[in-house]
Figure 1 (cartoon, rainbow, N blue to C red):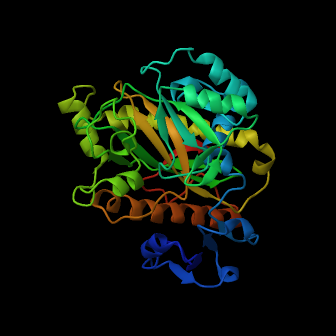
Figure 2 (spheres, rainbow, N blue to C red):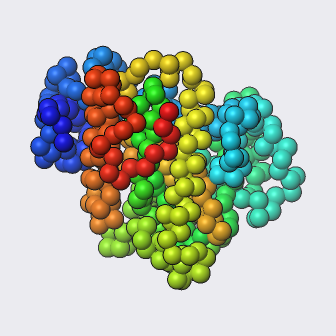
Length: 376
């Protein structure tokens, strides 16, 4: 696609990215960071300072959206200032409190009834852990109340380590697929900071739990935790029948089996709603650190966002992942990940080239499937 061959450096842990890129005619994989046009690094990136003409796949302060507590603070700050237009926070992000913040901890304690009941369900999540680790589902809050009242900065223990926690309202009125809880993973790209250019890939993965849903058995991750790490860890049948769907199957199921939507509702209704959610996340991210967006940066970010659909097909954002998993060993991800990742790399490289030549950064020939979310 490009007149020149671009040099890309990948760290040793980026094996899936390497598999995708090493066969591209316009890409040369290099071993020396200094010789690279683009650096794709999973670990140790905080020690890397890209050169003026280099791209790095990490944004400054990206933890403002990729850590659960920081995401909560970022969104609340933005919506408290009433800077949004249209969508309210309570319409796409479940009620969430940072338990390590004194004001939010007290507000959570005040909002809950003195007498616990099973209808008042919450997800207790470690702030910085991923892959569903350490998550607990609670309605009996007695022990948690005691813990929160004992310390000015309470932490909870998971596998011998202390962690800050958030607590998030459990979405109970779920859209069940084959009687199972599910979750959508969407992929999106902050391709430029100045101007702010954000795109979303229109095809995601639908991840199902391996056990049928019921509000009982709250300690069973195979019922309540959709993350594939948990499903693989605790399910003996996972490797025989990976619990994933593509969007075509989800669209057909919601239309024909559940009679909840017309055909094509994903393209016509769901994707615009998801774009709106990601637009607000990005706007909130920029608002929290406006000075970072006034300089021409050489950074970009590829993210994964997880959404749960309720039984009215409304998407609820649960978290944002940096460097979303690029494995593509199962049939569903094999149809999405290589094409998505190649296109994302082509987009940021073309923007890099046009920035140098003074071209129009919003007219990107590399865009084949990605859709604009934010075009400044």
